Image 1 (cartoon, rainbow, N blue to C red):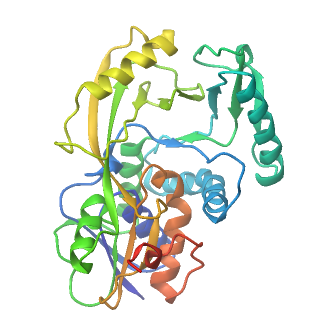
Image 2: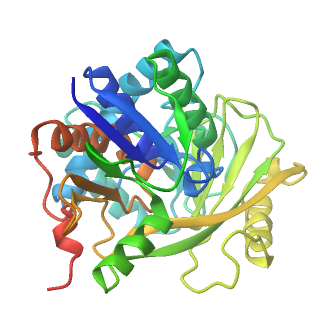
Length: 348
């Protein structure tokens, strides 16, 4: 039986530990703070695709991961008995002008060619989509059937429960034990640690702020309006977010930027105007130099592998990335897409 240590109990670490355990490996998970201490403990949970055009390895990989997400999270729920809050209910985006409508129709053609017939990108009258009402200057919206939602914290709880059912506990600690292969999935702090070890920057933390409203639209598709995600969750709340802040003073403090987003949403989505704010959240999301997740051996540390850089798409990429990381740990090889190699982020 192979023995592995996963450092970090965020979405990447927990998902990889789950896949390793399902493949029969002996796994331990070590977390320095708490489950979901970084961006994996946020509020939003949008599993949304890139636009179906200018196709590349990153977009193809994301499509595969989004399509396998339903089965992945169903298995997690079945084993552990905890609901991760997954539902593929689609996403609605308003179209601002005739040019946007024409571009959306072109992308619908792209989706027909690229999404394998397993999801659609439609241009439809705004009155035809269910759920929250949203104003569209043209009267038309994009409705795609690939986008899903997931509770970030619920996903963490579900994975912890599934791991416990398989005999894997979460241990407190900062150091990897001696011996055996180690996966470092330690988010923003991990980027800082790797950069310090190598002597140059391989990625940077990006701050995000989000909010949670007391608004029950649990069966409605999510919205993407003016760059803002509006995500109805299974527990009867609706998440709003998020900011993208490269410069900040405090990594975990909310400020006027999330208030501005809330004001925008209250105007764009009138049915949320009177909803009470239950929580405001701020945290750091790890972004690699290539903006894609990165996976590969830690230079100078035999047996140590890095999985990091999920940034805004980590939850959507997690199912397939977990399988790739498990392949690399178990066999020493994995079919890592172009741009996803850790080496792609190293100084040249």
